[in-house]
Amino acid sequence: MRRRKFLGFLSGVAALPLAARAQQ
Image (cartoon, rainbow, N blue to C red; front, side, top):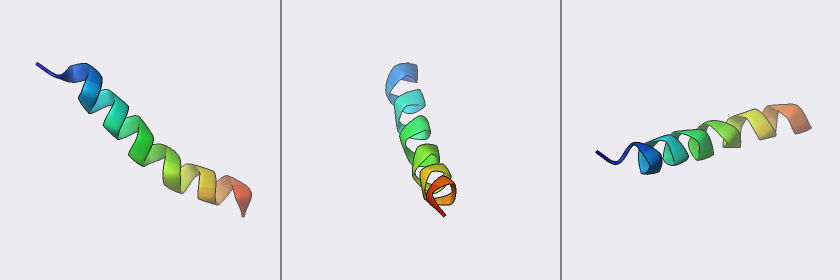
């Protein structure tokens, strides 16, 4: 299982829109 890679990928993808919303 590659849970660490999967979680890292999910957190990275989820952080992009969240950061964009926080800046706006």
